[in-house]
Each structure stands twice: as structure tokens, then as C-alpha cells.
Image (cartoon, rainbow, N blue to C red; front, side, top):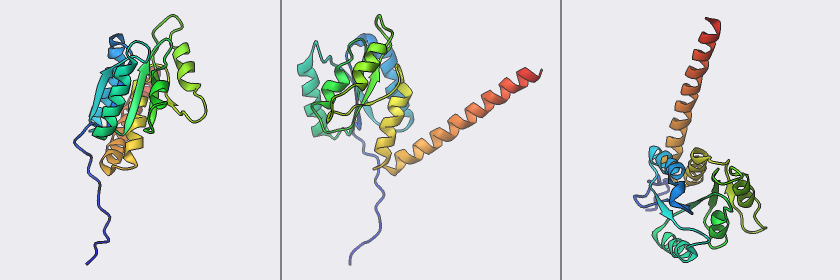
Length: 177
């Protein structure tokens, strides 16, 4: 007898999102990505590996990530910001670029070098220092496969709307007083 019911896909217990950053100096911003993913019940890991200083470490991580079932990669880098592009050039996994606002141009150089990729090497890019959006985009990609993540996103959106409404109501009350 064949079972035609649709199976609900449980979120795996292994790392789903690999977060790469080019420097330990970037960790205060990068940790916010991991924290947001954790809030959504998504297991992730942070790797410090530079496209320029330690490219072999980047490639070794990509090999391991593929073997271990990582499904989305986030490349975080400032200044020249080639990390997300290098990662995208060596994987078929979705890559999200998080340009960081460090350096003399306060992130504009990072943004441009992350978003201006050649044809066939896509990098979905979020705003400069957009840690939360990088995590939320990774979660939306994963939600296509994992209903639990889709539900967690729905609940997070509801909480954010409620927080926004409360803040707006408080601002109006102060203005009226």
C-alpha cells in the first residue's frame, strides 16, 4: 500500500548555515547573524577565513560544508570584500554577501565589490552591516524546504510588527502630551 501523504520535513540537527568572515575584527557584527539564526532555531557556524590571507582555509571549509550538508553560505567582509564572491565562485550553494562598514570608505567599497558580481556568479547582497537581514534571507531560503523555519519566520515577523506598533504608539503618545 502506497502512502500518498506529504511528509513534514523536520529541521536537521546539523549546521545549515555557514557564516564566513574575513577577520576576527568583524566578529561583533557577524555574531549578530548567528544570534538571529539561533532565535529562529537554525543551527549555524562562524568561520574566520580570508579570501586574501587564507584562501586555502576558505576552500577547505567549502569542501567540508558540502560534505556536512550546509545549505546556505553567508560571506561577511569589509574593505575589499571579496569573500562572498570567492565563495560564490566555488560553490553551487546560495551565497549571501554581508558587506561590513569598516575601513576608510565606511562600507561603500564593501557594498560595491559584493554586489557587482560577474554573470553566472550570483551573490545576494544585503545592506552594509545588515546582519539581521542576512540571517533572515538565509532563513527564507531554508523555509522553502523546512516548514518549521517558515513558522519561526512568521512568528518573528509578528513579534517585530507588534514591537513596531508599540514603539509607534509610544511616539504618538509623547507627541500628544
